[in-house]
Length: 95
Length: 531
Image 1 (cartoon, chains in turn purple, red):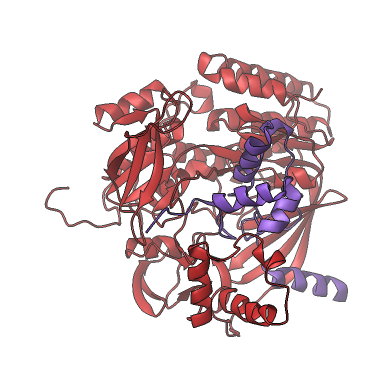
Image 2: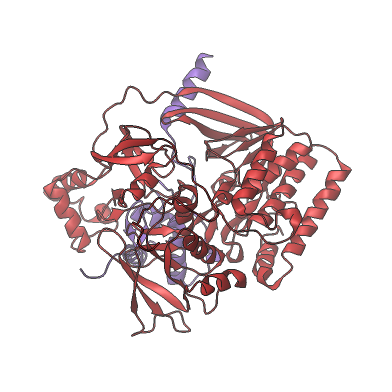
């Protein structure tokens, strides 16, 4: 069976090995690392992985967690049904 | 329990009683499942022995739920034709058609997945670099990616669903987001000053995470010492209902902060029957709590590896045992209390393992589970979860003083579920969007908004309370919430008495933290102060 995977980002299925590889390739800041690997872009929006990735990056770059910044966190903070938003706007316009 | 047939549904519990609704039937991937009204889809499936709810995006690994409170993404399924439904917070209904979002079988897709698994493919970010070149590679790669991607089958439109209601606007003095101990307290004390308050929570009842706590609280009588967690939740819930100037909005998820002090929220009336609510208020308290930290180890995504809070929800709210024999990672208060709660529910605890050389939680909690015969293995870590499709065991190892596993110290433990109790991280999305200055403070659990002793953030008029202001406990969350609620009120109305009261609460909070175990929190709170 070999070595099992150590999953960091559960939504986008990114393992620790892959994150380490990407950092070694030169994606050394969180924003580009996010775009390259897809971490924190899934349905949970980084709630499971963001800080694990920050920690791995900090360790590899010899930085403290206090020196790290998070990625941009845009609305929606939680997955929601777009129908509720669409309906809300239509009716408001009609009224 | 000898001789008794194992049943995942808890019938008798020393503290809790579970009132189950009508017996109903629903379908999971075409298979008929028995359930009780009031159960979540995830819980009913778990009770039926189904732990795998979906498969992972790239590697097609089996996945089960982790958090059980709608914060992670491991439980998404298609329900009655609607994709990506969080089954851990959706109640099961008679005849519901639940389908796991596995992809349709495709030879190409399977081959690519298998290649990815074996590392034969440039996996991470590979699609940016390797596949786009060449007239031959890209068309083939595109087909392979299409075959692999996506969640399950394309849903068929369901005409009975999707009844969305016109949006509503609520305007008032104070909006409190989060109906846990901190949020309810903030709403109560804002209301005491005569403010028009909205208290918003995404769950169908107030109490936050108190609803799953069976232990009695410490401290002084004034702050509910000696009362069990879930009972404190009920007391606070009742108190909130007694104020006519508090509007409680349940099943309402705040999804964003917008300029002009507007919050966007969506209220769930029924499954797929929702309406948007705009909340506009002069003051805001964010008491949005925290989410569970994950831990990186081999096969950490195997169904049966769950967050400690997820296990508590399944067991103490839904009344379903997480398994027969559990392993707990982390001997902080959460891990220790969980061990005891598992024993209460008639579940064996194989061991509690802790990476630190000592137990992190209160001594009384550790003593209680040691007396019950549960070993606490300090300076130990988990290397690997074992099992095919679901947890069947774990490999743990001793750590040396540099946190490296000692070669030769690996041992296999038997267990059918693993609880990850390695701490929480403050939920900071809304303060971030509101422009509050954030700071990483390890003593407080991670990223927190900078705040003063009155719980005001760097944005005037925005306050925080509870775990959002640093991971602590319910008693301090109540005090912090009261301070935040009073501060919000006092910025709008003058009240000498309330000012005095607020100072008393600040003092009480200091006294509560005046012990060696709270040294870390005191240090963290200093760091989180504005300069």
